[in-house]
Amino acid sequence: MLNKMIAAMLPYLPKKLIWVFSKRYIAGETVNDAIRVARDLNHKGVKVTLDILGEFIKTLEEAEKNKQEYLSLIDIIQKEKIDGNYSVKPTMFGLLIDKEVCYQHLREIVAKAASYNSFIRIDMEDSSCTDLEIELYRRLKSEYPKNVGLVVQAYLKRTLDDLKKLLDLNSKEIPMNYRLCKGIYVEPAEIAFKKYEEVNQHYLEDLEFMFKNGIYACIATHDKPLVEGAYKLIEKYKVPSNMLEFQMLYGVTPELRDSIVGKGYTMRVYVPFGKQWFGYSTRRLKENPKMTSHIIKALFVRG
Image (cartoon, rainbow, N blue to C red; front, side, top):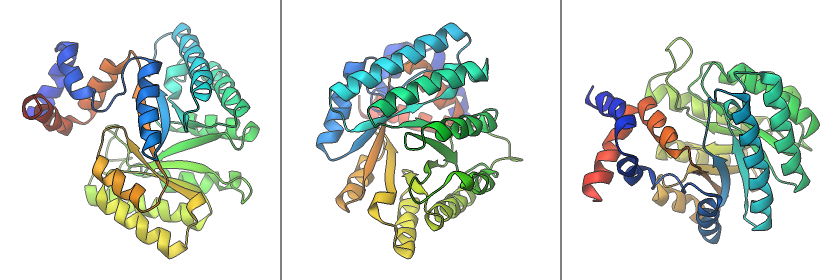
């Protein structure tokens, strides 16, 4: 209850105060901030995926602006020779306003990435977007099979069925590419697993399905038991190194990240940045009030 109260108050606190916590997890407001963080990670042998913050927009004018920002970002990042790709949230391009406009915007972004032989990841948002985002993925993959991937969320009860239904897109020549994460949005128990053990069990079931079916798996987790479970599945199915990578959020569990890199696995870090960092931070904290304990540590333990 206390965590929820604190989380509800956050949007009304000074931005400078929230930034004390947020700066550990967000690169900054500008492309230069993102390049600085990405280059540092690259020097440590870590790849990146870059994300301009912003989601659930209200006008199509915002969608157009966001598209232009991504097109510019791709040109800049390629020029700077950053080892990375890009993540996009479809609601940032008008998915819940006009899904066809959203598709056209994302098609332009994927086409730009494809011109550099780069890659776009379609992030999965809350359950109101799941079917729409799977449809977007199908349409874009049919035209750009090597340049687009999807996120799937292990806590949704539908996920394994979704993976099975999408198998028609898979091939040995061009395997599907999924980021498997637990899921952060608050969803009702009717559609989402709630218990820690349940979510972890289904995460590993989904991951095993990917390995068994020759799907490129991006193992996105900061949970040590899941990392250990992934190691066992990799060994069980003799998964080649070019068919998987681990992924983490910027600033989260760096020690575990370094240990995975030390074992020789590919690691990619999700690097968010942009002027919408305040909304992103406060939304995430309201969605997951337990994170408020980390804020208290950031403010009072780290000064």
